[in-house]
Figure (cartoon, rainbow, N blue to C red):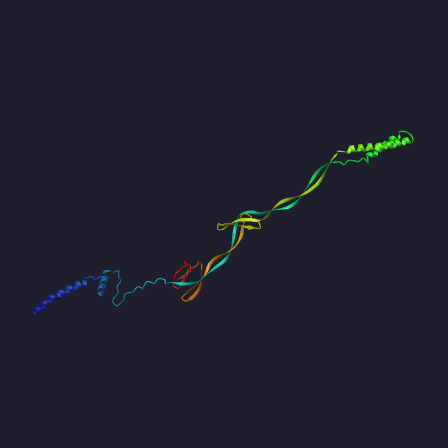
Length: 271
């Protein structure tokens, strides 16, 4: 009995020392702290909240999930076009001509000099000579002789008067003006149009033929062209077909983020 008491008295102090050592030892890394340990840690770290007895620790909500990215298949792409006028600024203008010949009558006044026609003496000088010769012959002789003298005087006077008249007009030069015409072949240059050079707003240049002459620096209409302003894109997503207008031409698929088709991003081509 006494031996048992002594044994118990020796063991109890050892167990107490071991229990105290276990309580003061820090918990191992990764071990879950018990309530007394949590209380003890809370006391040593005043900034850390701990659950009171009978309360549960608050659980922070999970971080939201990222956006869901999907792709819609493009079924059809239709360009949307409008007519747009093209203008150019005139930089130079050259005449286009064609030469041809045509007959033309040319007239001019010409001075002509010629001799006066010879007088034959039957008029004027001949008559005057005969009268004078006859008068002179009449004064010669008597009777038949006087008659013969008169006739002879008239004949001689006529011949002499005619010769004198011829000598007075022979060799005289007279001038007169006469209009003379002739035909000439004339070369005529006809304007058939204008070769117009121009510059477009993008800096490119060109030329074209025009019937009317434009002024330098003016704007001329060069026609029209089709300009693409967008694309009507038909796509299929979640079994439903829809159409959306886009500024740029897409690829084979459209990006879909959280169920919404993205039309403002670069087109994608994924299969």
